[in-house]
Length: 302
Length: 246
Image 1 (cartoon, each protein chain N blue to C red):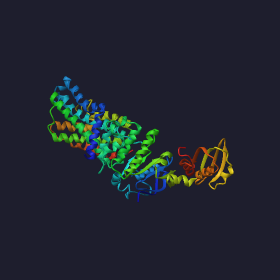
Image 2: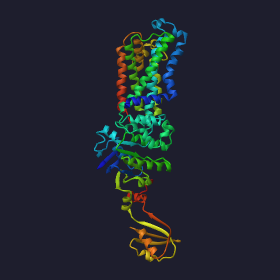
Image 3: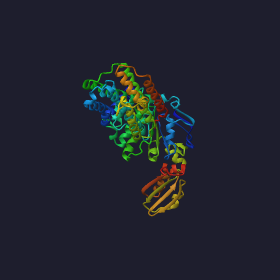
Image 4: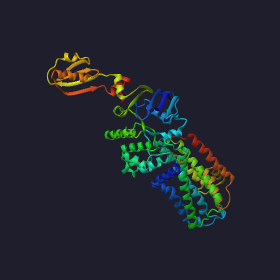
């Protein structure tokens, strides 16, 4: 059963339509990504889900609740981590956790949560003295302390260094394993590809695709390219005759074979039959980046 | 602990982590009273003041100043900074409602300014023989009305100011005229009729007179009660109307 349903959502700011007829459903227990370039309408969409903005059209249900009508109940069920949201400079980590857990009906044990997030030795540290990664982890802890069914994480890893970003990804998977459904807003391809069970691609306020990361790549193009250095000369025609192969080219000492389907198996089998070993073998697949360009006509960070 | 008491406790803790705010809000008013009381002439009864001493007039003025410190300097800057930094935005995603958030700020400011009032009254009584308010209920009513009016204005500044810095600046700019008409530089008794009439219609002009009346055993003048309630309703209403989370 869908835990979040968004149906034909429309949100305008003046004459600008930020979200224009977006629909999707998030299933319980999944990590659902909302991917798109800056200004695509991702944040506006999740702010409507969070009940922070009133839609101009369409319907939203979170655990069966209308976010604008039963906001009090929504606040108990949905934890939100917002972009650019701070805490008072001199508030200590432990104080923030105590404060935020006092807001909820049935909070989790915040000490255990802080421990899971690796902040136990920072309990007495003021917010202004935390690193970017620690602030983000605290932000996640505050979003989870009310024991929500859904957590919405908006641009969680923006501004983090690569190591902190990878730590955050592990953390998100841990949270999902606790049974929390996660909506992850991002403009990082790698993050979307690595974490999300399904992705909604939003561009200029419209939903342009909704699928698994692999499905998105496949719908765009399943072309693959194999590069290798053959240990002995091989007749190109033998490879070109395989049904999976569309082209064979030579580049210096390397062969580049392009094709579809189970290309790698077909090529390596043919090579083995001719007693040729493929050295420096590399398979290049269409990436989510390529899929994004095909779907929207531009690169995500352009 | 409930959200309100936890928020109030947290705000109080944060207040005590800002030494400058603590000094100006809590220590400065009693220090000013001591300085004024140290001037011998201010301790002599004055016929033109109806036999009162200057220091007797200053006790309620300094109590009012303590309110203004919180209402004009503390509250607007704190609230606008919270908005600017997205602290209010984050709170909005939790079950805490705006009245609880506002309530915690007001409760903290009220408790702290009451403490300052008690210290000022105690120093006045012990060091300079200023009589304690003889109409305690009237004094408390006058105090509460003054505080409400000032806090409402402070919240209005917080609602309108675009940033924490500008809220602090607007608060400081308002602080001086408000305290001028409260009599900080020249007590109301020494003002001419025009100034005193203007003062009657300012929140702390009315407030100081109501405190002074209660100190000498009278209930506040209806005009002053109406002025303070008027400021509370108008400024408080506008503050609620223009309140923004972000």
